[in-house]
Structures are given as C-alpha cells and as structure tokens.
Image 1 (spheres, rainbow, N blue to C red):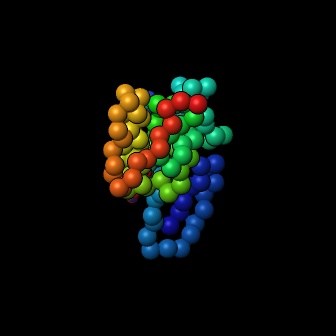
Image 2 (cartoon, protein in one colour):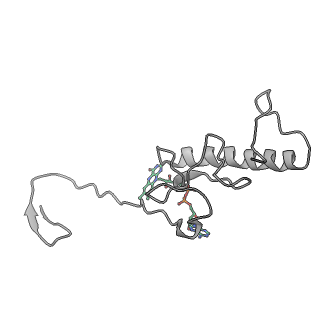
Image 3 (tube, rainbow, N blue to C red):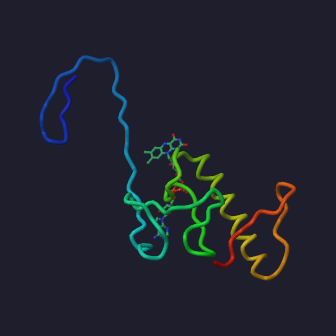
Length: 111
Ligand SMILES: Cc1cc2nc3c(=O)[nH]c(=O)nc-3n(C[C@H](O)[C@H](O)[C@H](O)COP(=O)(O)OP(=O)(O)OC[C@H]3O[C@@H](n4cnc5c(N)ncnc54)[C@H](O)[C@@H]3O)c2cc1C
C-alpha cells in the first residue's frame, strides 16, 4: 500500500492491515497558569490525594501529571479528588472527615 507522510512524502510499504493511532495529548490548562502549579507540559501537579498547590483546589485525570492516561485511572483519580474535596470542606467546618479506610485522611486546610 502507498502512504503519504505529513510532510507530503509518499512511501510504499508491504502489509495486510493498517492501524491508525489518533493522538490527543494536548492539555487545555492555560487559563490556570499562575493559579495552580503546573509542569512544562501544562499538566497540573497533584499529590496522591488530588491536592494541587492551592488549598481547596483538587484535580484529577489526564490534566494532571499522573502517568497511565487511561479512563479507569482518571475515574479513580476523580473519586479520590472528590473525597479529598469533601474532607477538605468537613475539616474547614470543624467536622469529622470521612473514615473511608478505617482511618482519617490528613487533608491540608492551611499552611
Ligand atoms: C484517541 C484516544 C484514544 C484513547 N483510547 C483509550 C482506551 O482505549 N482506553 C482507555 O482507558 N483510555 C483511552 N484514552 C484515554 C482516555 O480517553 C482518557 O484517559 C480519559 O478520557 C481522561 O478522562 P478525563 O476526565 O481526565 O479527561 P477528558 O475525558 O478529556 O475530559 C475532560 C473534559 O473537560 C472538558 N473541558 C476542557 N476544557 C474545559 C474548560 N475550560 N471548561 C469546561 N470543560 C472543559 C473537555 O471538553 C472534556 O469533556 C484515549 C484517548 C484518546 C485521545
């Protein structure tokens, strides 16, 4: 079969099938510049609880620096970030955080 590269160069290769990979690796986080810490790729830096550099702001999924950008990973991170946000609000109100793992998770409220 005959293939044409992005540069317009035509190349003939032998093969029985073609698998097209679609890319989608551009982060749209520019509007958050200066608001939360990001890396050079524009990914938001989070810790294992989904906390960003700004207290009370949480992030999850492909927009973060976490590796393995897959649906199941993003969904799990979303659940973690949601629980962290809930615990953050509880702590701010002087109430108990949820005991999801038989212990209290230490969410940063100040400092
Ligand atoms: C071509 C391709 C194939 C893939 N195949 C697989 C696969 O087979 N299996 C797999 O597990 N994963 C696959 N992935 C990865 C998977 O799609 C992602 O890991 C997952 O969708 C990330 O979920 P997310 O919620 O973090 O981000 P997204 O699914 O990207 O959701 C982000 C949402 O935010 C919206 N948004 C963006 N900016 C703003 C804004 N300023 N205000 C409001 N909304 C905004 C977007 O429109 C989008 O709806 C694939 C990805 C691509 C691109």
